[in-house]
Length: 500
Image (cartoon, rainbow, N blue to C red; front, side, top):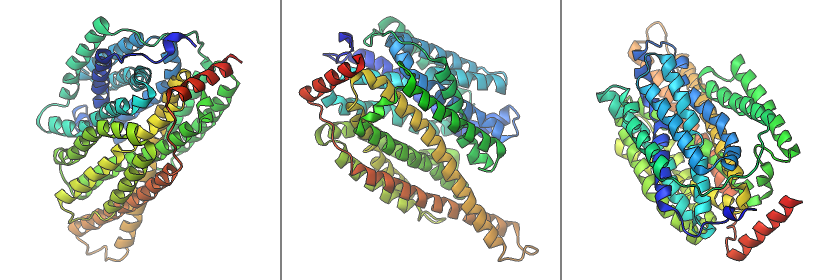
């Protein structure tokens, strides 16, 4: 192993600041369009919601395709080359979207944005891993969590305000100058700290991962709107699953795999990865079900619903660095048990949301749930990465980010399907009990509203059980030994095995 791959003696704080700034801008952009989608569709006269949803689906697909390749990119190119290229693409895509004359051009801009943004998270995470010693990674990764979690959480609130009082193009126009500033700072101030190494790109692996993960992401995201019986959904999921299996088998046969799955030989990383998948599915359930309850059942405006979610985002922002320091002191198990217990209890409380639940109660429960989630996400991931030798850091972060994307898409599809199925069943049952010839429109609306509420309540119950699974798994988590002797021994063993 090259000496330059060893831990840096002093973290490059200014350079990390540039990376954080760029990452915050790109992550904030990820969640801006969800609230603005109806307005954009009306502006471009798009009548099909499935067509409009491609602004989010297309972005997610490009990210899901490029993230598995990030391990190769992080090994082949320096952090300076990658960040400048990423920000250049992101800035170009933002400009295209801001001044798009039609929907197709806007969609192209979003996909160019995604091409730039997708490598940002693995790049920043790997830079953090090499910049801080393992015993201080919790604090550092807590700050990273501040960017990764809070920026997307602020998106809906900001978007709701802008859409209500300004034009949707401002969503991109306000991002553009910050993207340019980040790009200029990177060109003049960013230095290399992660050396390149000789590696090769297996093109068949790229094809298999693109079709595989792209198919799964598209299938799961489409299932939430079209249903699981839709032929396109079934075909894309089946083809995607087959390609992912072929991709996995191929990685074990290659001397230089695109994605080194030997990271799963390390038990704490494997356990952390499993818990993160379950947690991502549960997290996305809350992100989908809560706005559905607030807007579709309670008929609260997009701006007000965004403001209701804001305290939860602030709580996560405050807690992320604190959680990082607590992780360095106490390890992952205590934080995980406490955090998942809080998340589990508050998710169960959400099953009791009804038509009379006060705004204050909704905000309180949602914020406490975000408090619980903030205690588990980064500590568990960091503990898993701590068990990996430095050589496997890019592959560990790529695996985590890829599975997080797939789990999020799957979680969204499953919980939306559960919500719709239960709602339809409830509505059908209630309509069977009334005289359809005399029922008024108001009564029909009330039955539909109550049916949707029951669907959301039932989905929150399933989300509670999902979180409980993650809680049980956390009891098996052990703190990775990050002492100098243990790390040196692990690196030596890895170096010997890698040569052989």
